Amino acid sequence: MDFMLGHGHEEFDNHELVAFCRDAGTGLSAIIAIHDTSAGPAAGGCRMMRYATFADALTDVLRLSKGMTYKAIMAGMPFGGGKAVILADPRKEKTPELLMAFAERVARLGGTFITGEDVGTTVADIEVMRRVTPHVRGIPANGHGDPSSMTALGVLKGIETAVEHQLRAHDLKGIRVIVQGLGAVGWRLSKLLRNTGAILIASDIDLELMETARRQLGATIVPPDHSPAAEADVYAPCALGGTLSERTIGDLRVSILPAQPITN
Image (cartoon, rainbow, N blue to C red; front, side):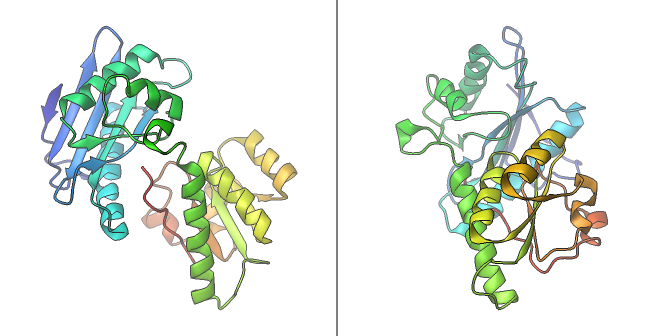
């Protein structure tokens, strides 16, 4: 496990540790970033995806770990911020051996980093990691499972509270909500919104998934590039992150932009 400082990177924010993890036998290539542990051990999910470049992976893990620190602070939780990324295609390159090799690197950190499910990893994957290290969360063995349902519920409650405050509406009936990203959280949020009577506008890079949302949930679908500019009351970003930028923020035509609660 090689340790890197990361100084000079645009997303580096005095991170306590940035470690590049490699294992030739399993093909493991991963980065663990610990942003801050002043409030407790760094907590953050393990993301698995094939990045275009190593630099993209480093940018992602630095940005996400910093965000986890702020989420924990705002939620008043005794954790710091961390994140991990495994540079692999979860559909083609994920193996139990690779997962356990990564978990062994987590174990070496002695509990300063606690990880769990994220994009590209599942509850079953975390259970495999649990064979090697106790420093994981989000599995039935420690009282929790897939966190996406609770994340979606938290976003819904945030939307309801913001709508009542900003729009003076006591429910979501007729409120137009853009859900950008129809993954585990976005799909569950979309189903919850449909049940409240909200007008659902769905967007995802997966055209088939958007069509399913239109057919099953009655959603109006918009291409991802156009979702920030779609006319609505609420914009709920549930994709990988980074969809809001200096360019896209100026396109927003909504009154409310909810934040996701801390779950991983």
